[in-house]
Image 1 (cartoon, each protein chain N blue to C red):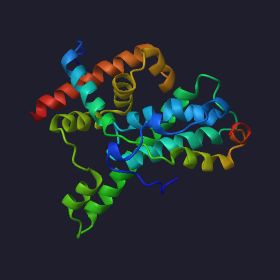
Image 2: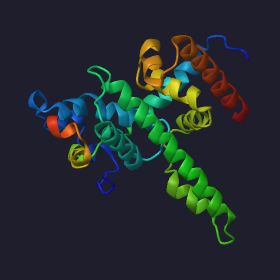
Image 3: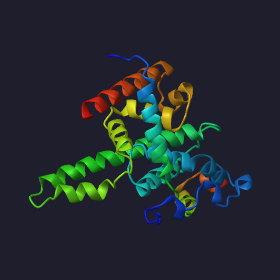
Length: 187
Length: 48
């Protein structure tokens, strides 16, 4: 699961449509074809390297298959999105812990560590917005990702996160306000 | 908290997430990796 070689550019790796599938006779391949790349895109809003994004999404599929019963038909996407977001959050927590430990070491060189974990993003503006999203409270960032990255409806977001549609609106509104304030503060 | 609709920030968020998504790629063996994980699954063996 952890050793898949990940190319660094999209030109070097096939997109979903290039991967041969036998979805008609293979339910897992069907789920994979319908959700995998969208899920990688989704968690890419929280995580900054493709390899970790893929690991998180593959773990979400594996977690789904470890359930004693599969999700009800039609609910697989919501399950996978929820599991992938939880996995992405877990990765962020691990990174924070690792950074705290490294910073506590006398020989730690912060610049090298940061550079290794945060490859430069071409657009400074994109970088600033993503950084702002990643600092939001969990629900706010998840709602923004599901709304503006995955293009889900409020109802679908509510189902994915197990909250009410009203809460989705509240988290989205507060998240956008928080992003705007962070951008204003840093400009 | 001011929660007035903010189309400009909304557009910035959408653009940033879209650009990040454009940079993502998937590995050719991703499905194989997931299949390998199915072996411990009680129900996935039935469908995979």
